[in-house]
Length: 119
Image 1 (cartoon, rainbow, N blue to C red):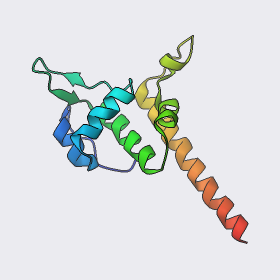
Image 2: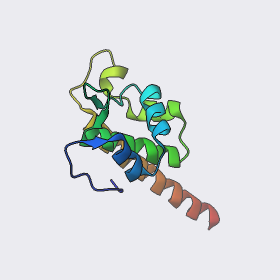
Image 3: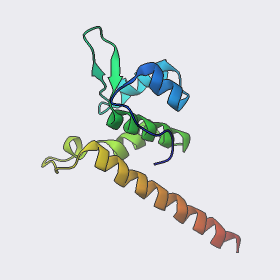
Image 4: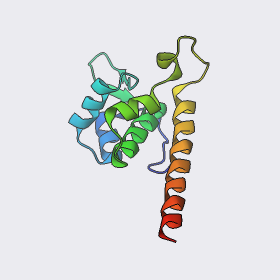
């Protein structure tokens, strides 16, 4: 996945906001809108994002930049456990990578279609 390289065990809210170039209120809003964004909280209430949390937030940002709605993003990124009656043994990280690959293929197919329409 494109973007900042993930190299630490935990990232603070300000770290995530700096990496993604978003305001903290946007990140907090995403936590409310997308139930699968669950950073660890310290006793003080401070949020700490694990690398897989950061990957998920990076994917949300990428999808937002591509024009997806909140509902569309939820549908794409929601873990299988939340969408199926019989959960599949697939984690968020694998789900995010599969969806990222599908988005890349979809974008390339649209590009090919535009080329064919112009020809």
